[in-house]
Length: 544
Ligand code: G6P
Ligand code: ZN
Image 1: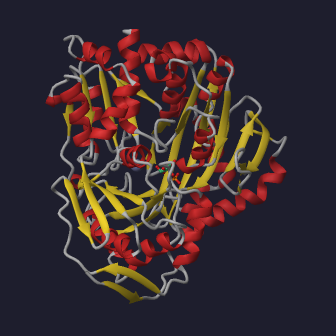
Image 2: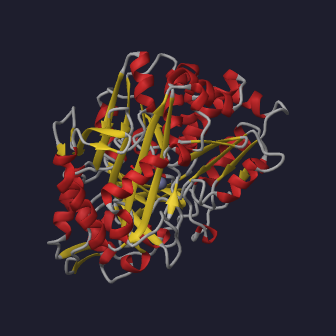
Image 3: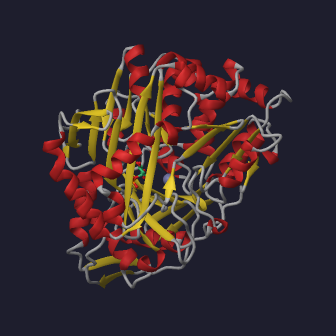
């Protein structure tokens, strides 16, 4: 088997975003584009010769091709072994789990998460380090720097590896092992949750659930967990077959895109519990009967109830949330007496806190929740955590959430997204806002008084690294907040995200629709940032 050295030219746009390099499939299909980025990853790593790499993806279009290229390049670059999921399938949390269990050097996740797939959809590549988590910024910056200079890559000339058959084969000097995509992950879940108790609930006849895999990666995992191990029956999983284009859908588990599930949970004869996960299985949405749990509330409630779950029965070291996530979990941490860390958007920022045992649970408003069991957020883990709580408390989702609000107060919360805005206009909007910050402090804006106004900057408490310009925050004296930032995961133009939050301790006022409760802040956000004028948009594209 020969190794080819191929001369190439750099591309200028291979800068990893919030979560790896994400582009339209057609961009990846440019000659050498994929190979350049993979070689840039390898060139940025040290001492990986003879080591093990984990590779898998969410099954979207281009997954299989990319895996074959990565295998041949890993062999040419001297990796000793690659563990690859059967059929090329590994959910993002499963990659993290497999890296950790096998003490692998690192892993490559092929996914554009919740973005649509197919030949006209998106594709993505993310590098994870040996702790199982996304590479920190210093690594992604090195990869980007390398991608701008690269002039050669190495690839083995060989037949494609059969990804459908479990077992090992050789690619030159390197061993390729096709592994069961589900097994390690399912075992880890069994070690954390009380499966017997959840099984009793699900087979009691008095409880029904539906898990929507949105034709994406969690299908096989959900079948193995809910149908096989927990006895909920095959009907408990909908859209359970992974498809290369996700059946034409947008695999993002929120009220807008998971509407098929939402209709069932809000319809007649609604099941007791519903959940959905995204393209690569790291996001989750939790629904009760005619009831939606915001991701921020979900994090707070899992934190408050963690001791009911075997894997967390000894309590939590601390919690962490991304800056735009609501402050509901802060209140739980304060009451239970542990730290709550506030990080920039992006799961990679939780890695150090988890490794240093400063945080046990973490979460983001963007439908992500997880813990120190892996180093990615984990959609099905969150579903199992909820089911474990429900099995112990024997209450409905709605009553658990409402009792939580009674005890801690309710943080009304909503995110307004303006997608595919002209990048220049979006940058102008953010620049204008930044220019106003110094003047805002102490000002009265309508019924609100500005307590602080800044551009969020984060100093990692473990390694001291600083991340600046992570989003504009305007906080008011009554605890309300408006946060503005540009998404780091979009692939077309810019996406402006406006996060709105207010706090309501009075139980008699906790039953409002969040859009009504937040209406004055919504108006204010437009006034301060001139959203309509500058973007030319009358309303958000998506409200969650
Ligand atoms: C991905 C990341 C999350 C992040 C989310 C939204 O799912 O893993 O950490 O919160 O994208 O990021 P964005 O930059 O688009 O707001
Ligand atoms: Zn995802």
